[in-house]
Picture 1 (cartoon, protein in one colour):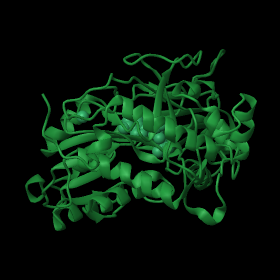
Picture 2: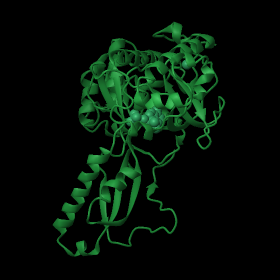
Picture 3: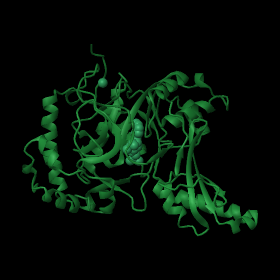
Picture 4: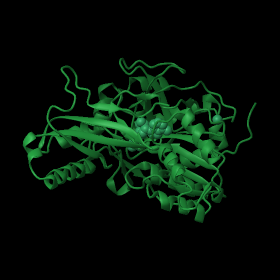
Length: 438
Ligand code: AMP
Ligand code: ZN
């Protein structure tokens, strides 16, 4: 059975597997050519005997290329992975949740164009059209979620409201004023918005919502169902990461059975995170992605640290690109707090620089309503508790500000007396995550 669904680029989206592989091989060669222009890959590829695009004879030659990690990107900052002249760079993005040195991604004009096309394709695949009013609630700026979908929605011809993140009252008012039909939002924020409906006299019946693109953070099928029922909408999972452009790597179609990963633009592999061995369709492991459509910052075999599996080809919509499962976890300790990536090491690095802070601390995550809440509990030296309350409050405020500068979001900070937080004899368990797993 096939479902009657619209396409943005039917030929590519429904291409036979052999054609997809042909495109992949041609683009992989092209990408290797771009990569050889960067200081980082020139060294790395030469070491394994790849000196020109012709050294890639078949897709199996991808396996000769070593993996790339986030640390590689950090160490290449700022221009070790730049393959074009800066004059050709049209835009710069970076990843959230990086310690000290950010990871930076450059886009040339044709890179932005190809990325935008993947988003247009993703949007149309959900049944959204140029008749829709699109409220983009993702943060704009260096984070790719805002501008990525913005450009894609414009290409489709939707009416775009670039409202950005936060300010719930204004979001709801805007949904009513412009009769928004499609949202782009993190699932936790959408639940939060739902909890605020009705407060200013605007209820579900005053709105025209029909769809939401939800992504940037892990969520379950239950959360999707709940959102759909509470708001009377269809919700589609959207996956991406800045190293691979951002959103538009994988997106659900109208069948809502996991996300088509656009294989003409990305080569996906699932590997055993411990050994690096490549796994088969259906087997869970770490997702490794090669970007085939970015000239300014080529990325080959990037270890995403996201755990997932790939479905074998085939979908009722007729698309032939394999589907990626929900993200099942991470191989590292990265936390995602309301869509923002936070590494515990970032927090440690900052608080340990503050002289008043003693040695023990704890990172505590829970939920307040629908939203994630991050609390950093720190032990401070006992003499500080003998001073004025105002001074303690100033110190607490200083720690909040320091942390905000590093992790972008504002945590709650609690000051504790030495010895009051749990102590560990072995490996310290600094992170306590009490968010329900639903
Ligand atoms: P960033 O590079 O800041 O866009 O963050 C990318 C990371 O966010 C990914 O590696 C995932 O861990 C997470 N992420 C993005 N989209 C999803 C999604 N739909 N489901 C689960 N996690 C996601
Ligand atoms: Zn499909």
